[in-house]
Amino acid sequence: MDIKEIQNLIKFVAKSGASEVKLEMGDIKITIKTGGEESRGEMAYVQHIPMQQPVQQAVVPAVQPTESKPASQDSAASEDSKYVTIKSPMIGTFYRKPSPDKPAFVEVGSTVKAGDPLCVIEAMKLFNEIESEVSGKIVKVLVDDSSPVEFDQPLFLVDPS
Image 1: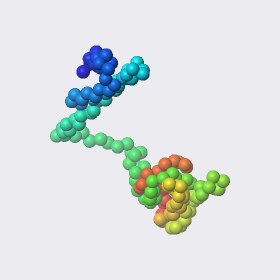
Image 2: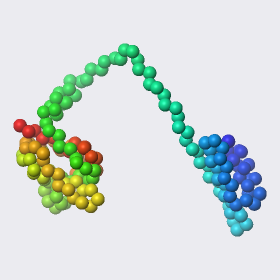
Image 3: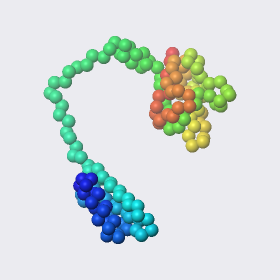
Image 4: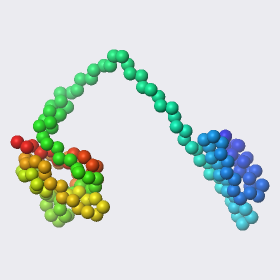
């Protein structure tokens, strides 16, 4: 249905005196409302209902080219593998400080013991202290202060040696 047909339909409904007409044709729904005698304004709503597209099967080539990773990515991955990643146990907002006027729980280079508080995650107005699972040195803070975190998102890298 094109715009001309829709405009003609609106004019027809307005002249007929009907206050509302609903029309469904396949994946298109049209609702036309007129104000009747009290107002001469006309309104039309056109809603396109998306049809589910058939799933296309991906064609995999028989020979796939091999990609060579840059040496810097390989070395970074091997360096990170020797560290323990502390992940978020919940969804919420990550805070490095217990309150805005206090210092951060830990900084890069801080030594922590298992059970030491590392940060706070606020979820539904409840502030949950996240404690270290291992003893070691904080190598990297992976999340910015006051930013949202997801469940199982990496927060800190700790060198356990």
